[in-house]
Length: 546
Picture 1 (cartoon, rainbow, N blue to C red):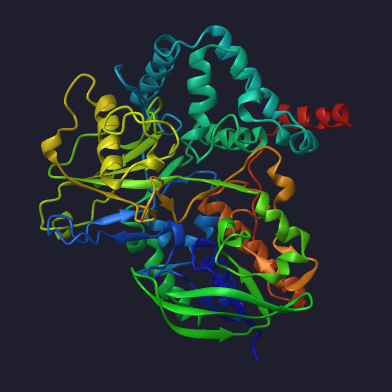
Picture 2 (cartoon, rainbow, N blue to C red; picture 1 turned 45 degrees about the horizontal axis):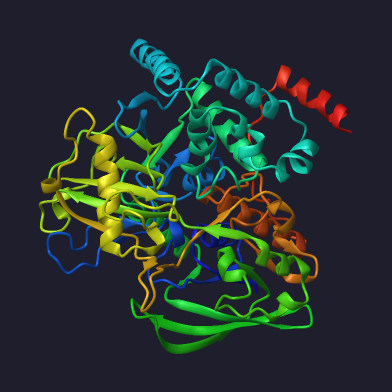
């Protein structure tokens, strides 16, 4: 009889663990709270009964697959689509990055190492504009270059013992540089990547993710910025679920695990209820047991105040530390347009927007998607936007109010005005009459009373010193419970799909080790390190630091 594994959570981590275990002959049951697979990575249809936008696509936030991702693409290439194609073939490369500012011309650069004379010219223009228009001094630029060299040549011990306890703001020296340096090189480079602030984010995490992105851009032939060629569930999650079920995985939607039962230091089962959406009304109760258990739920679900009861937390220090981890908001909103707008072929970074917006125009990346199927057939374009700062006051429709105190209508209106303020610099790119409607991530729930909304799915933030409170996937005190989520210690070390995928692989490897299995272990990839003089620099720094 194959050993049985219960996985709590059916997002990227849970689906990855199910994939790897199912391929190795385990009996796998996945319990997923929502009625749509994929967790934070899922896309969904707009439930608005208005026929103009009903069933139009929406997402928790647009998907972004940098070139340094290795674990997610490896999984994608093992999800068949038929005719010899895999989900990996549904990734398409963006070619430009546009930095947009209010009251100033945009800065556009290639999102890759230049592949033509035209891209070389575009890069040179971007460098010139960067130096002359942003207010960065020569000293700022030299300082930042030195900073990158310091990161590239730092030994591992220094990273974990020194950089981990410094914020990116302090490490980058922002307080002693120009205002432009703080805006663009300290705050700008971090807050648009993840739901983090330069003053809080670990310099180790922030610095090394920035290095990965810069290395991708400087490597000829590297696909730096990739996106899906259709809504996420159509292009990735639904084919993945079909493949998991072909492997024998029992993936159960709308099942809320409410308790993890234990006896001594061993998990003995789980229990909960089936629920109906969107009301989340409880229906049938369930109980289940297995040989091994994987918690593939986000950190806020594992913390004490959550609805998931885990009595083991009282006796397992590694689980107790999870209460010290911090999470913040980063959620998406999409705007449905009557006519598509001619935006850059890639991501737009609204570098000085109050709510730290990033955006992408989807139509240019969805060549085979029939837009006439959306709503009443009059949607011509979709502008997908991520909101990363929910605690800074708005400037327009929500003037004087942060996003987390706004109604859905106020958020829509404020984001639209922030977009217009930056994009309509020399011409009217966004027109009010062209916008049909906006659809805010339904994870943002307005309150029954008070003035603060709730976010059902926030993101982990790698604050200074947080590495010490993050567990490994295997818990020595609990031999049959394993952790697979983006708070687990990984090479990726960032709250991303890539981090979740790697964490799940580590949890599966831990189960294989516990079983004494002869099955091949899941492959893991370290972040890329430049060799040559930088490798020598790390070796010398190791001696100096010791």
